[in-house]
Length: 210
Image 1: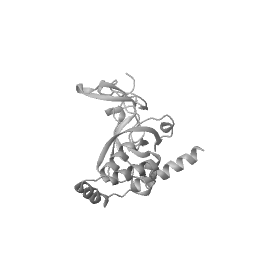
Image 2: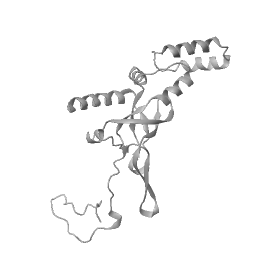
Image 3: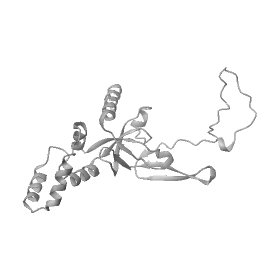
Image 4: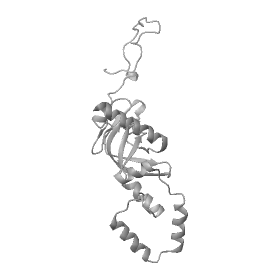
């Protein structure tokens, strides 16, 4: 029957071999790993015990990612896998697994931030954007809208590391769902101490590879 989840083949704590009193059972079966790759969406349905379903994500290229400090979630394109604590081979082959660090497209989050706060995410603004802002200022704006933006801008603060990532157009995020079980690659953007930790790990893993 192939792969099994039973532990009867293992030795006891003292090292004694356990007696073989039965053959494999169907409820003990296991399945090969999905090894979800980066690519155009391909999800297979797998019938499981009790008539339930698992959604085996074979290829995925997008996911819903949360920006926890801003309390929002947006669908973003996954660019690539950059770090995995268990195996570097998963990084090389762009395999999506839970707790893997990925790079995602920053555009949906930038778009939301600028429409919500009325200010650019990064301090560096292009000449075209600056001229567009100047035109907007000339037009008579609603007082209530201006007041609302001013109120929101008091809390509009992005940490420096995240700002540079927005400038590059790519954000570091971590996958919190199980692509092989749910057929989704959802997660959250890395911030604060957690981001600092993973940036160090990424830097050290690159050094070991070279």
